Length: 503
Image 1: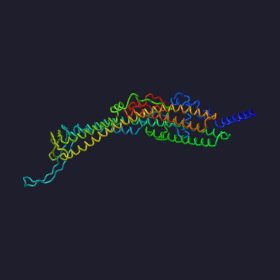
Image 2: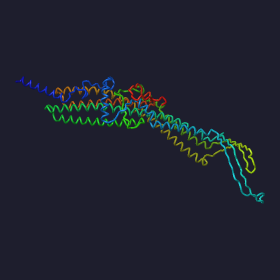
Image 3: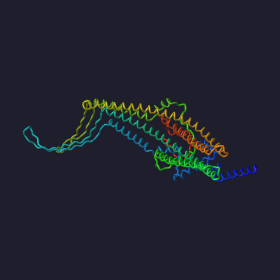
Image 4: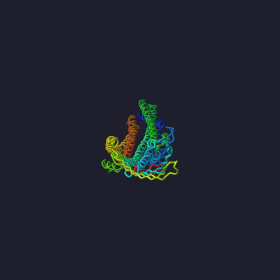
């Protein structure tokens, strides 16, 4: 009797497992779920299995295109940087302003060029005059002047010297502003690209999570149908599946918005659906780890283009302040006229030569009052600019401190996240095995699945945070260039954009 009961129980158990395998797809179908027995997420992020990467990327790309109903334009970081330098309106504006400053400076130097011009004058003089105070005589004649005038400043308006020096420094400031705009553009491009890459990799994790949840829901329904599961487990699985779907929808929307943001950043149509070609993610060490905050700040004081630009602006304002004192400086001009003068009534015109030396000793504007008050105003403006320069340097040091500690913090987060991913994967594996043999509950499996997904999302976020912090440290220290930003970068490209050496 006892042996018959055992045989009957074995038959029921076998039937249950056959039903589960039939309805749920089990945990061995790689086409349905992320098989925990073969899952190697950490190696996958490092691009260590080209075949697996190609297969998974094709699946992910198809999912994204289907969900968003878009085509994808594959780009890498170098592509985006090159496109940005060619198309960014902000970069073009900075170049245009530099050109404007160049011609303004050239114009300010024109005071050293002598004035040479031709003058012609024809008059019609008519009326009556008294001759000897008694006789009335009528006159009518036409004086004519035709000649060239040459004027050269021996001691010109000294204001022009100071004005030219001011414009020269403004031109240099514009040169630095162009370089700073380029560095800022590269930083914003890199940050936007990494954000988009984070969205892409996160979607893959969330899609896999959704498939896991769906398979778990099918499993719970199958168990409930054969009487070994509970309605609560089914409801809980349905809730988790719905939540996983919401996460995927939100992530897809974030991807689309970040595509638009990156497109706008690099100066192309925001409807362009850019898509990172990178299939994995690894920390990129762009800065020498021996550098500390003080050394980075000292480098920034020498290399930061915005600091250089502000220093030139301060010098320009200083020249404008000194220019006021030129209101009291003498002005001496030498002029020469070669002309023919006469009247039409007397026949041909007669040659005429005039040399003159003109000297003016001004007493300032409005007897000095206008000059002194203007100098006070310019001095206050100069002082304001000096304070702004000091504040800029303080802000730069703060930015360096922020990016420095963000980088260090991200490094520690990466280490912790890698350990968390490994532990979470093991925890899920044991939960699934325990669930199969009845030692763990379905709640344990769901919690392990959630922990696994969160750990992987956290690892992706930590690596992206580190790479962005490294790029920002380059920018904050004034050493961000296309070469330093793309150090050891070898992601595949489909557009083959190259950085213009002139940029």
